[in-house]
Length: 72
Length: 224
Image: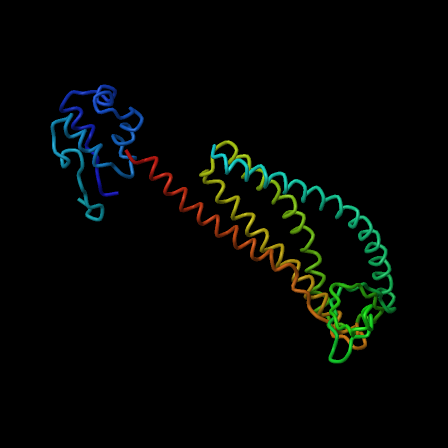
């Protein structure tokens, strides 16, 4: 998939751990880990909203599109 | 676990077990008798074929009355003329092997050679797959990806079962047309139990439905 999840980058920037963030947003660490490792197939708007609110960022800071067909 | 699903699963298991045990018991008795008869007939067949004598073989054929009144039984109790078909009767015919084309004899031999291992595999495999599906459902794993393969195996097995039986019947019928003549009747090919095709295709269809369901479930599980 061409969508890259940069949640780990944002978490590092805000210096917040996975468990701490999961407690703050009310998502289980297992589900947050699925999102962080890029295994997630979809993300709810409500989840994105609460993550942006807690990490004080925009959706584009968490999600990024990369064209797989272009080889650098 | 869903209550309705549980009830259906239990009902399927019980009915399948009753049918399987009943059929196995009945078929075992028939198999013993048939095997003894076939063994003796086959031995005699081989000896006579070697010596160039006429060979005797039992054919299982279906007969359809040709145009005209039916002769057996002539009438019913209230004297109404009857015309009916005869499904799967056995006719013992004695003939010279040269009466049947060589290619047909070889084809029938191969069909008989292939029928038994295929049928044995299917008879053993289907109950195992049904048991595994029921087991996974009772363990609340309806969307187990293995169930797709299990359903596909059952569906394909039912279709193969039908095709193999039909091939054997077809070659037997073709040979019978060369050596069996019944006055007033024409030989008919028996198309077997067509319900098996329907059941096989329904199983394959359910396998594809389950495949889509498993994919949806996976997406659902990976939605955060």
